[in-house]
Length: 90
Image (cartoon, rainbow, N blue to C red; front, top):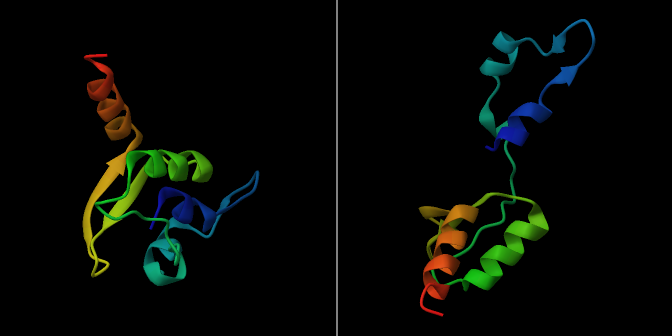
């Protein structure tokens, strides 16, 4: 469940936030979470990771193994560090 998924559950008005916090916190996460997530596998080229991040306007992507288990997260900062390291000697 992303931060955006959580915020989508609220309706903001000038008088109150709907639903109330207590009501929202009792809801099952399955009703709020994103079902189809964009993810990469450990062998995905960094160029593809960057393309997915820019196209989806996301800062991080989950990295899933062949069994669809989470093995890590890759962030924009990780990609930038890799690019910096790769061009350091150039």
